[in-house]
Amino acid sequence: MGAERDETGSGADAAEPPARPTKRARAKSAALWGLVGGFAFLVVAQGFLLVAGGLPVGYGGLIGLAAAIAVASAGIAYAAEHRLRAKRVKRRT
Image (cartoon, rainbow, N blue to C red; front, side, top):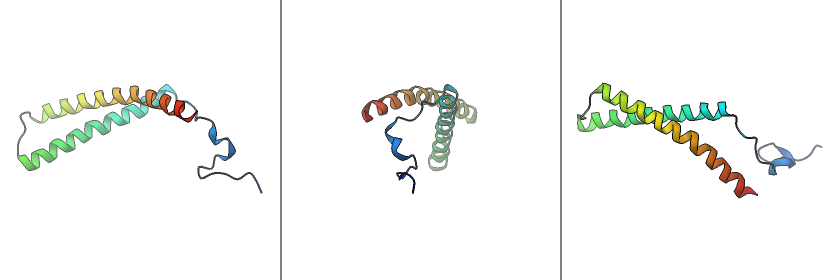
């Protein structure tokens, strides 16, 4: 029948590196990772409040810290995605 395809369904040209993501796609991915980081901090803080009973900052401070963590993790994700992708492409060749 046709050419056999591998598990990914891409066929014989699977050795080619995938297309580079656009800046918009990288920014969206980084923003989503930022949200994950911020919400993860809030989950850990809520767990600490439930177990230990108190934090040295109030809810406003927690929201501010979560926002700072979200911005930092988004920036790190934006920078790291490009570097990790470049390393992965180099290793395959």
